[in-house]
Length: 88
Image (cartoon, rainbow, N blue to C red; front, side, top):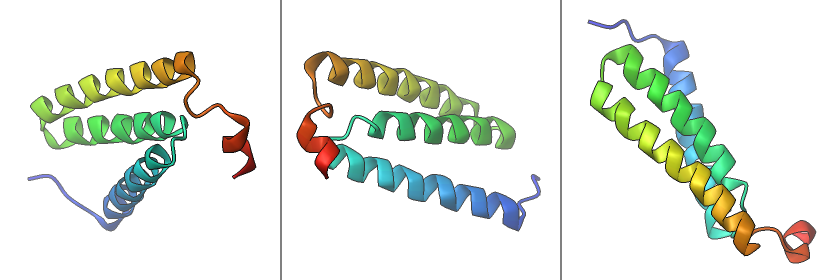
């Protein structure tokens, strides 16, 4: 059994809250959401490997690729880059 300590709980909570923040950024049309999501999914991938959830870690890598694609796709379309975004 894997020892689960309070520090892991703190990191898990920060990662979960960061994921919710990324969702809020996405709803606001901020391209930064993909960067935050990428960082979060890298954390969860490492965490899943640590606890032995290899299939979940595999799906995290797919999510990571989708976040990178989303970041560049939004950039090409100009989403999240307008002057209005900078004023908020």
